[in-house]
Image 1: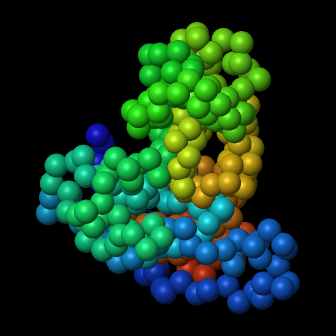
Image 2 (image 1 turned 30 degrees about the vertical axis):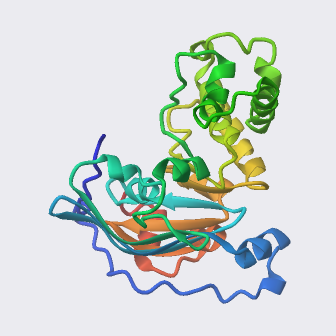
Amino acid sequence: MEIEDPRPIPEPVVLHAPEPARATTARPEVLPQALSAAMTAEPALRVQGLDLWYGAKQALFNIDLDVRRNTVMSLIGPSGCGKSTVLRSLNRMNDLIDGVRIEGKVLLGDQDLYDPKVDVIELRKRMGMVFQKSNPFPKSIYENVAYGLRIHGVKDSRVLDEAVETSLVGAGLWEEVKDRLKDSALGLSGGQQQRLCIARALAVKPELILMDEPCSALDPIATGRVEELIFELKKDFTIVIVTHNMQQAARVSDFTAFFWLGKLVEVDLTEKIFTNPSQRTTEDYITGRFG
C-alpha cells in the first residue's frame, strides 16, 4: 500500500502559518434551509487529537474533526497532505500497515474505534469503503453485492435478493443490470463498476460511507452520475470523500476540510471555504498559488 509522504511545497510560494480556524458567524436562521440543517445536525463521527506515525515519521498532527450526520464532508489538499491517511484511519485500514502508531480518538457515537475491545470486522461493516479504482470481485454482479452479507452469515435467498435489488437501486444501477445479474461484474463499464462497488458497500447497511477519490479514473459522464448518487445517498448516509478535484468538492459537499503537511488547517461550510476562507493558507490553495 502506498504511504503518503508529506512534502513542503515548492518555492517561491510563501505561505502564512495556519491560524486557528474561526467558526462562521452566519446565523442559522438566515442560511438556506439545507445549510442550516447541515450546521445543526448531530456529529455522526468525531476525530479528537489524532496523531499518526509511519515508523519514526509523523504524518498526522493533532487532528480534530466532526463529521455531521447525513452530510457530505470533503477532504481536500495537495498530494501528501494526509487526507487519505485520515480517511483510512476512520475504519482502521492503517492497522494493515507495519510500523503505524496512532494516538487520539475516533468516536462513532460513544464508541472509541481504537479501543482494544473493538471488533474491527464489525467496525468495517459500519463504514463502507469505496476506493479510487473500482475493485469488483471476479464474480457475478449479484454475488458482488451479496458478498458482504454472505460473509456475515446471511443465507436466506429472499433476504439476499431483496438486499441486492435495494442496494443496486440505491447505487443507481438496477435498471442497467437487472436482466444480467448472473453476468460477470468485470464486463461492466468503469463507471458501472464503481457504482457496483458503492452498491456492495450499501448492502451491509453502513452508518458511514468513505470514498477515496471515487471519480478520479472515470470519464465526465460517469463522474456526473456518481456525484448525483452522492447527493442522493446523503439522505440516508453520512459520507466522507477525499478528492483532488476542488470543483467536485464544491459541487457535492456540505462541509470541506483543508489539510496541509499533515495538519488540519481549516474546516467549515463548503460555501465559506471556497468564497471566504478564514486562513490565508486555504485561500492560497483554493486560488491555485500552490498544489
